[in-house]
Image (cartoon, rainbow, N blue to C red; front, side, top):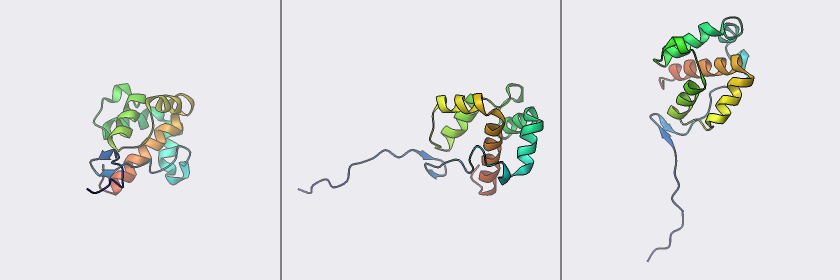
Length: 111
């Protein structure tokens, strides 16, 4: 009889591999200044762009639910509570992070 050496572990997967993380941080605005400027001066436009990218209704704009859906789809760690907190305290930066992540995944053909 062979002893069990390794315990089986659950690994969340996405359609593109195993767990991932955000491509940029919430405050990494200089990674894409265009997105940052749009997020600061016209967050509604940025919300509609994100909604269009995710095939969602633009009338609702980007929301906690949309961030949670995106995070779940790509296996990004977090919770609905953390999504709520980020949107509550830094809504523009959170929108920019989501849009930057979408653009970077498009560049990698992983969106």
